[in-house]
Length: 243
Image (cartoon, rainbow, N blue to C red; front, side, top):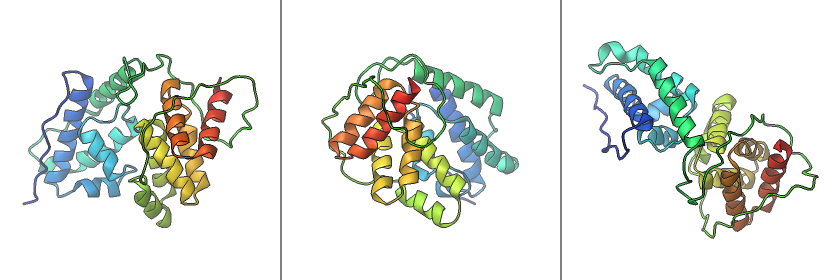
């Protein structure tokens, strides 16, 4: 008998995020019943182990539909051998939309305590870095924090690139840039740059430029505090092009 997954008590108030997280946990329990571990889920998806862990604990304020679809498809293949009832994918996607809507219009950022921009940023595809010319200025919030250390998922990205899994690596970079914690996004971009992966760093920055302005300001401040001036300039340039 495979060892069943056990999760910590869910510290979330009633609402769509709690409901979605419980559905995600059910999918993972079905996979656990089939002998698939958290690491195994990461191996067969575009998600890193830390992203899977965050989803299981409701720590991702903007979970992606493709991640839920991938997880559900994996669980569906093993649902017949589990006592847990597979959640409906349509319901999970409906909850995901509500969670993302609440994140876009929420009251404040848990990290910097500033209000989110209520307007959802326009879509921005990864592109070459513009020159940033123009007379518009973006104010910079200095975080005052200490951004020591490397990005925890860097080893995962490097492993996937070495294995030729470029699309999987790009998915991780896209997720951290667009949906990860603001400090994590800054650390990811800076780590990629220091590792000699400018394209990876630019991918993170390109997706970070899709965020609300308050998040961008916090990321820029974190980068400046860490001495990553070039990456900060790239992010500001992309944000100004979106204006």
